[in-house]
Image 1 (spheres, rainbow, N blue to C red):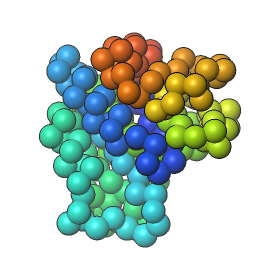
Image 2 (image 1 turned 45 degrees about the horizontal axis):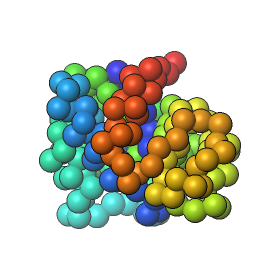
Image 3 (image 1 turned 30 degrees about the vertical axis):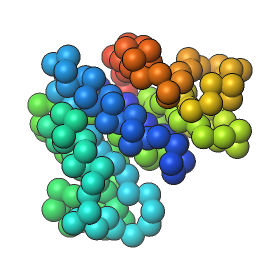
Image 4 (image 1 turned 90 degrees about the horizontal axis):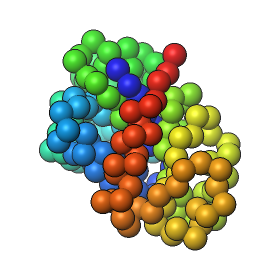
Length: 168
């Protein structure tokens, strides 16, 4: 199972990119799973899992969210990211896309909203690409970059980077 994270601060476009990547890969026959980190503190409201529903509608065969003490799998227990990845590895998934968990060691795509977010590209481990809504911000980065306003251009390129991802 290949793994790639989508990282960035709130409202940077993580969920948008996740849905686009899930749809893109699903259409090419890749079996995709998704996992979202509930990074707002506490546990997710299991009645309001709109991002996970969107992931499923985009083609993910499995989707989950993890909070402090509750995981969407109705496991109702605390699990760290590596434990969640092990759960996913028991399913026939080719690609696991993880939204959030910025500081985890998996290969990741970082999204930037503004100049202050640029530091994430240098601070976070295993950054394979960076994207944003302002292409001027991305000009001098040392990783491949893409403009979030042009999905027809960047999705095939990101798919190549993601297919090269390996971990462990």
